[in-house]
Length: 286
Ligand SMILES: [Zn+2]
Picture (cartoon, rainbow, N blue to C red):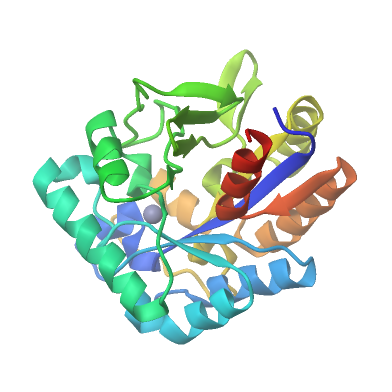
């Protein structure tokens, strides 16, 4: 579909305490590990990349200076719910009210229109997607389509047409899916977060390289804690997998992200925000 290849770097801007296994844990944590946010921006600035920052509404006032400086520097703000509760865990009316409230709050704080959404835990269905559309959003990016992920509800995307691999359109509203590639015959997310961090780097790098050769759109996402330079607290009573998810690969992730950026550059990808990609799609379809 595209004349060029595009990569979109994103972050789900939330605290360490918003991570699912921590949020559901009886022991509270007193660190937010938001230094990982600063590290992410430092890496992107070094490579001249602008990111879309899907931010938890209730967190935004607490990190207002960080976000304002990013926006002034060309990064784009989008919404990642009000309090990081899975949309499918609340009824549709509550979802609508929370999203309306957050959209208004971010507009007031940053004087910028919020047109993009990503659901916590990629937990979204078609009805809630329609609510986003009704509230004036122009795109969503929650289509992970990987049922092995906890909480994930596969969007059916009824009424949408796939206009390019993993990009779906319904009128002027877009669903930007997360990138996946087949590993041993099964689709596996290669779009970041734990999916890249926990995998053996040389193995996943080659899978991504193959994907990049064959496609023209790639999405990367991660969370602030994944780039922290602080010690990630060990919580008693967590399941071994959760402990592993919170600890493994943190110290080398920044290095691997830079290698991924170089890989993308070598494969001819241009880095855009979702907001810029929307403009490119509209321009191409004129
Ligand atoms: Zn999240």
